[in-house]
Image 1 (cartoon, each protein chain N blue to C red):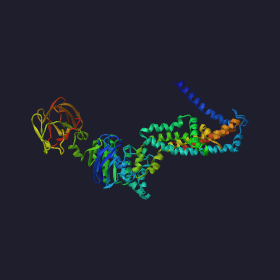
Image 2: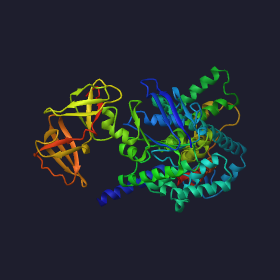
Image 3: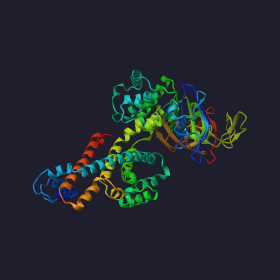
Image 4: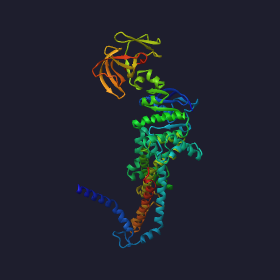
Length: 352
Length: 259
């Protein structure tokens, strides 16, 4: 197991830098996701760690040792690519054996370790097949097996589920998560899918525009995002412009329309403009004239176990998600009940 | 509908006749028993093949052409593959320029390339000594065929395969040998066969750059036909056609159905 530290990584291709000082530390056996929209630098960060890109500035440490100038083949990494990148001219077993051959592992040991890993990724019956003859999910598991059989210091995954259909993606998510815990390998996972990042990771790192916007546990990122952009990227968010008093004193007093006030925790860093975030499932519906805000249902979407409402209020249209048994008709006047403990102040985006 | 299909079939047959008839005529003429290159042949005989096999000039020319073609192909395979790798993986903005420059020998009239090389090699004081000019010409002529075929087989392939090999501990060279090379083998085979045939066949370059001494087969044949008109020339042609066909068949057997 290995600790990975990134110390102010900068990568520039001549123009605007692709990475603008990425600092991050990943603990032993942790599963860390780099999450962000395309072009945010998450894949570039991964390629720098793998050694496929040379860093312009900054350092990469594995267990305290600087490896940022080492060739990829000297870094002891296992990598899974979005396209899987299986060797089409080799069988599944030969694909797995490749890394061990490169490490000059004796033949008998190779056979044994390949067999053990095939068992781990549940592909023993397919050992002699060529990648072409496998389904997407099976190819994915070959790629995982090939990366793990060499028992690398760290495992890097670059959008490994992007090419799978939705059902298989859910299955593989659980499979990868279990496998990672069982093997206990330090893992860095790149994705643009906040659902994948949230469900699988110990630590989620949200990146925008070549920089880290926020790093934290999935709960921290979801419940206490630092900015409006993070709040919106990791889930649906209502941002309310509420008048706030004495920001920066540990708590904030909010004044609601109608005169009611709420006290919520203040952000660590004071922001120029604060918005108050309420997730759709953190707002409850109540009778008209009750609750903190009044509004009118403009749309109701039945989602099976829940219902998505859109409600027009003085603060614009708010998204509210309720259990399926809370019924209000489109056009009906309702009251909205906020949960003071779950409201969270975020820095509003400059553009907003 | 029926009529259209029938016409299309007829057209196909005519195209094949147009393409293959001259070859068939040459092959048939080589079995001529008479003293002159005529068609239809006057009686069947293998006498001109015997004459040819006893004629050191032609045997030398065939060996000379085969060795020249093999060497030119080998060099073209190396340079063409490197160029294709650069073009597909690294060229970036210059990609189109690189491609056009490499394909120039194919686009320009052969005679122009030959004359340019003639000037060049005299200018640098080498002239036509040691067959360097001739060899360079053949490499230039065959290079586009290797480049095009390897490029095609590379473009269908994922660069991630090479990166995956690197991440698994393979050096650049090992990754190329163990992963890239097997993936582009069909392109190399096709490009190689083309290169060999082009070099074996080419006339203009050889004619201008051959210098003194022994000459490649097409030149030798040309020289021969200027003063003689026996079926021996047809026999030589038949043998060289068999040579070419053999190269295609062997390459197809080895690499054709894979990938």
